[in-house]
Picture 1: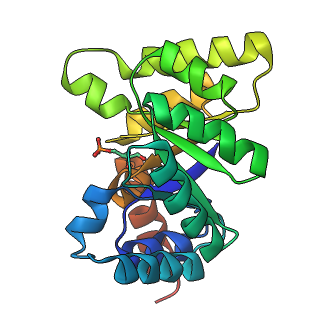
Picture 2: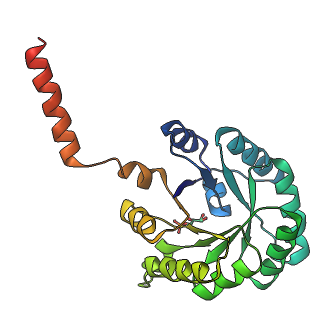
Picture 3: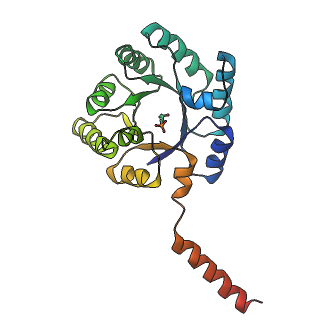
Length: 218
Ligand code: E4P
């Protein structure tokens, strides 16, 4: 399973890259706003900076919601760097834009996926990735993980190449469940990735190893 980090924070992206387990980055307009990035030139510059750090796909979201606007913005984003994946919302014109970019060989990530039907439509339109938001489904008492299972079954039934990018991951259990099901990618905060490191028996065991070593090597 590929690990993407879901942030526009350059320090966190660098930290995940330095850990040696990072396969890509996802951003969205809210994450860009959180970093105080505004204005077209600054936004494009920031995407460039992300691409310089990470060795993998970088999702950059269009703001337009009409077909022509999405194409214009998406083409401009795609020209920035080969790593850019154009992120398109799951709306009617978005489906048309997915088909357009797929025919042009430009990678896409269909975002704001909350149902298996939406994921099926995105795959049929040629999306490279679909992003089901599991955390936001959990937030409203729907089982986000169950949606990943449904999409995995559907894609496997028909051999769709679209990769399932489990998004809105909030904690390590989400990551483990997604890996068990066979999600292709997960994207989450750095805290969810580093939480995978933690086990109290690891800490206790290491402390004991080091103290035993110190006793005989004093
Ligand atoms: C996906 O690409 C989105 O950026 C993201 O995962 C949404 O996560 P959130 O629900 O934690 O905002």
